[in-house]
Amino acid sequence: MAIRAAPPTEEGRADPSIFVIPRYLRWDERTQAQPELLAAARHQRPIRELTRIVIHGPGLPSAVPAVQTLVAQSIVEFAHAEQHLLELHFDQRRQDILDARPTLPLIIRY
Image (cartoon, rainbow, N blue to C red; front, side, top):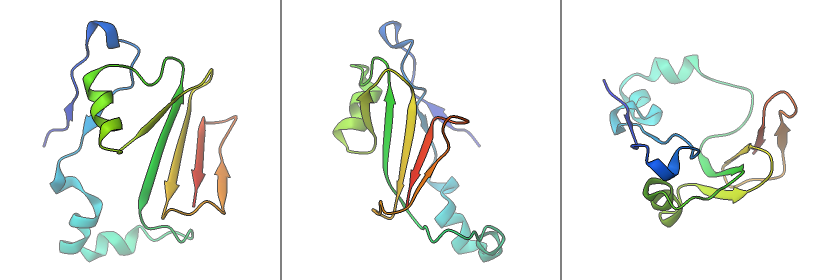
């Protein structure tokens, strides 16, 4: 198995690393053939699907082609900010929030 990474560029040394996960590694597809995987991963939070990703940080978004492709296809949103922060939104809901700061620069909305 291999996970491809977008190539770095001279002007993009500070850009986020971007990895492309092959379709056969998708969790929903793996669990169709192996339902025991899904049963083993049950959790208390009623979340199903990652519907929005926002990455905050200095110098974002950049003009690097890989980053611009993600923005153009509305896969990831980038926002300039003084501090790094990752926001994960599940099921297009925002009423519940898990804020892991200051331990991790992470907010989960579900």
